[in-house]
Image (tube, rainbow, N blue to C red; front, side):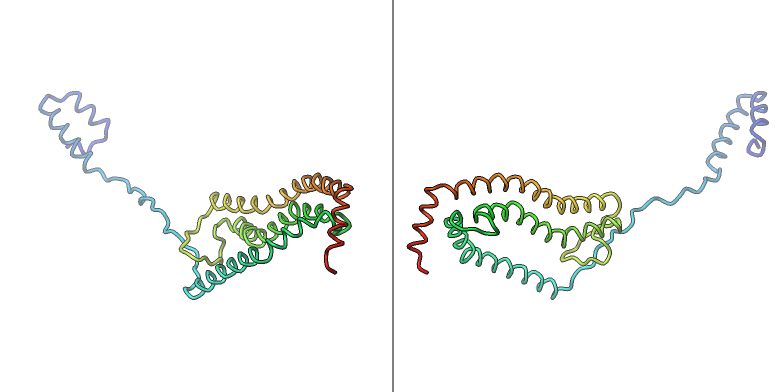
Length: 214
């Protein structure tokens, strides 16, 4: 009977009730508590299904891999058969020649410490740098519309922006290395100019020029 009274009325009734009534009221209250309607809870949170970047078809994948392997093989063969012998001969004769208005050895140092980082920077900017800018704008990595060679999950939010910033930092590292290399090349070029102007080196260069066939 206590189920239908307000809470205050129930407490007043319990205050004047006997032990038997108290036991019955306790059982009724427990039963009422179990029968009270429960508030509808929100559905459990579930993670969104993973998104994956579009992949190249099988034929295109094999074509890209074949072109890459072929390009690496050609570069390796050219470096072993032509570039390395030419570079060794150039280093031996560099103090005896002028290139771009300076000693050839000095020009070689500028090319190594400044030219190579800038060339690498252009290549990286055209590939990783472009992808990094697109991912930073879209907030997703890989950026929308970019095809990949293997199954790659799309990352969004802060993690995607962090990867994009890492790509841009790698792109900016090459110009920074070129700036550092300028001071190194300047010091080495001065040493090369002094070495090429030494009388003994000039005498050796004249002797080599005399025996070299025209």
